[in-house]
Image 1: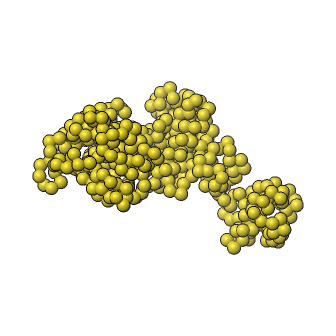
Image 2: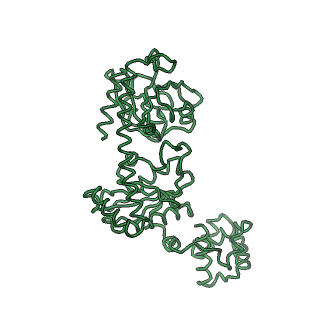
Image 3: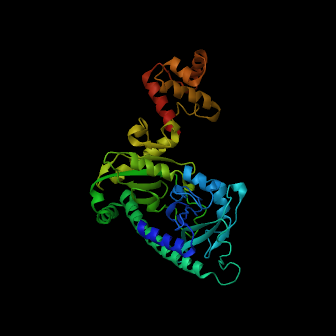
Length: 413
């Protein structure tokens, strides 16, 4: 299907004698066309992937800061996205001219061709307009559009049909994955059978799950799209779904079989989404086949929770690397803190709680703890005496230390 997008983008480039770039609705690059004169670019560079490919061959239109950022960082600033979206590109049904905005770094204007199917927006075709398209009539002023624009919009509609079909296929796989992870027994078995048929040989090989939590609906979604990213935006992903009240699940095929990198890469990419603001991610241990994906999902969620609780583990944590949180995340939610530490966990004692946690993380070694906290050893001893008074625990006793340590770690969750 990637080749189909490339062919259609090349048609638009040929029709308008200008380079064209196709991005999805989250501004990720799908395909770009280079006109015969060797010019490249023309993309909106408005998102996380926009312009990375298009900027690979430069020439013709001068680079503006938006394109430069896209080439170097594979994403653009919120100011750039806001500038493009302020012109209503998410609701547009006809070509739009977008003027420059030097304050946002947009030094060259664009023509945006909305990519839609049955009223739903799936992306944009961008044409960088450095003046050579100034006389092109888009139909915005009431007059008939240039026939070249009409042909380009017909091609954009064909792109929209392909993207819609891809979205439907991805949504069906996502529904099956959700049933397999959280559905009742009958639904899980039916989903496993159907997924095995859909995924062919990949279903019986190595598989890994990544979780991102929390995962929110984007303010731009409305009725024009759901909160789940397209599979095309996640290289190596086999299925993706939003699990209500839990997070986003991504099923990945590790290559090589025992490599954690594909799942980690998918999670890191998702954390750049506006829907993942304040989120963390985790991955479960790889599995072979579909039989224990529910277990892999629990591990991925546990790792994501640990990454949110303990910054040093994140932003993406592997279940195998979260240590005591493997046990703590398995415990049911506590209605209240353990009575021994309830007073210590009050906001006014945050510094004492942190001191106790660092001391216990350092295996009770006062010198290491004082250095980690950047305080004098006598200050450490004073704070620990206050911890003992607040909790009634004897920090010289192993079981009391264990209780305090577990309670402080669990409080993070």
